[in-house]
Length: 316
Ligand code: GLU
Image: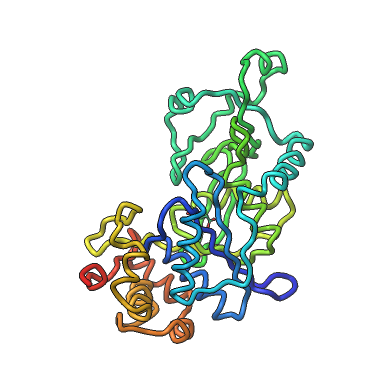
């Protein structure tokens, strides 16, 4: 999708909490191929809101791995850890409109609700603290998290890979936290502000985040940002169908770089993503020419549980 000024803007937004592995790389590669095949602008953004888990050394290794593969970017935007004041402005805007309320529920109270949101393990909040009086709010003696009120409204959208999707904000998500009790802004708010301010026109990421779109579209509307196109790609799976995780150290880029030239790795990934008829080595330029979302959507439909990496990749 082009923005009003005609520009395609894509981004890759890794969390630098570990070495990049093939699972993350899939998202980065497809985001890059989509942007470059349309002559657009590519942004890199480090999502390091969780300061305890994120390290600059990991951010550096992600940059090195991307550049090794030939996946460059036109701009690296400020990392999220430095953007607290910007998020605060948007937070205050919501607060002034009466859309936020403080929530004093403890972790164990939230667990007791027992209805996790299908996608990310957060709970459909029943509104316990929605209408507390100022006296009741003052009686807890601790700092609250802040939730945004959601309407009883179904959000519909079409994902470029997963197809039609819908979620009811109240019944499937509930009022959700935008700032934690420790003052840290949550991913949902930060990602919407960052993508919106950077003029991002397409969001490519793992299918585990599909269930975040309704909340993000709601915030986009409140903030007045244009909705980007969404492409949620199936998870990369090991050849035996297991989900890859950061524990699969042998599938980190750092390890794979020692074992094979980049063209070989691109061939494996391009084949797994449905872009190529075989997993033969290929240059990034040729892979860009072979790219289309229709091909990715087709293979995703055939493999709803995830895209299996070719066994040769593990054996080399
Ligand atoms: N930072 C997230 C991750 O590494 C991606 C978020 C996004 O692309 O919206 O999984």
